[in-house]
Image 1: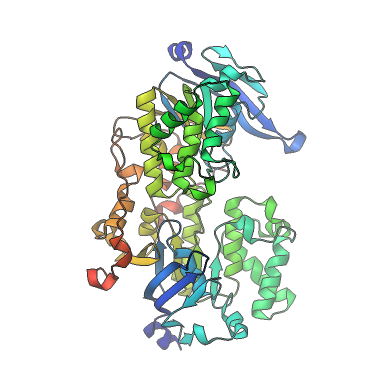
Image 2: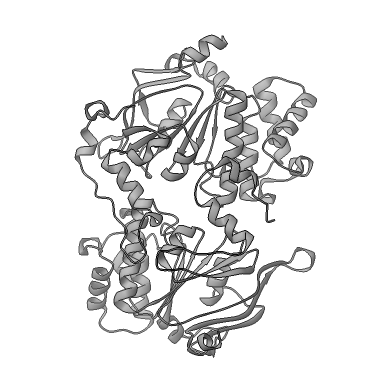
Length: 266
Length: 291
């Protein structure tokens, strides 16, 4: 474990994030620690309200941190993120219907991060990134509403990739899409990771997606990290905790006898 | 009456078409959809835009498009000939619908109890006291542990799973003969999803209700329903027994199954769906895929 932490690109140490005050305080993230070595695909799974997205948002600098530390390449992250941070770490959001500006064309959406970071070769970079995500050039001057869900998510991924980051934070990148489109986006993400040596932090509620995409998976429940699972080459995990086992069973479909035995983990 | 109901189908839909006129010409959302069902669990599966929700809405007379059908018969009643007043007698009372997202289907400024009693009194014409008893009974039927507390709460004070259970309880107040559930569980966590399905399963078993489950999750409905109708671009491309999903013939059905991550070997790319224009035109009968 210490080995991991020395070379980890992202390390989370005793992270705690609370919302609200007094009696109503919710421990959204409660003493969570993990470390991600370079070029790994790391999954965060859990049911809604388990704190998986909050961790990702905290990494991106979108949520506050109450206790603990977030480290990038061994350096603690400051509350105010620098431009250099966003050059290195980019995020893709869940819903491509909501995360793209409705009145900006694809061209403008892709040019904006380049302008912020002061890149000169805007033209070449837009062409290159559209090729990378397999988006035909004819879509360049269209608006998001003229694209399908899968094409929009490609634009969102292209916007994240255009700065050539090393780390992608993926917040349920396929849960708003149909299964057939999901397959295309997952294939794209896998191909890009291999081509560009990226590190992924993937949040999902779908155990099948995470075990297909990731080498290591953290299972979250009510803010706590229940279990860290290693995914073997066949995409199988061997959970030990009761909660994770139940989650595994539940994703295998409807079975009356099994459901009777479910325990509410509220 | 009971004899008749078991013999005649509960619902018979014959050549249902729905069109949405637009400046670019009409969008043909549902094309020649026909099916019959008894008191069983039938699933309608397809991607977004395949017309599955519109089919469900048309049965309730709620589709905003131009609906036409050769026949639309529910328990011997011709739904197309009903006056809007007569339709109201059926809608909610004998055919109910559970919508996808409880957040948008419950009234946010009315307590849950108040909206349940309102629905109950309109549908069943009972006293407030009787309505209250009925609501409590239904909340218990969907396994809400503290019905008293939930009764006083507002929709934003309950979780998604709880909200969906409340929706189902509301739809079941008048013991409908047919329940149309439009993606009732897709906003919920996997374990809650299965628990909600178990509740609906019990109701079908115990009360002999018919259930149309609209979903995009093919493996899930295969493990739950009796029969599956697969829709593509407004057409039913395949109809099969849930237990025979692995013997699916149509390339679209097979494509939908093979693009799931659980079917792929790790490290191998997922199969993607190659759509063919010919699927749009083929009639189901010609392919011999009707069960």
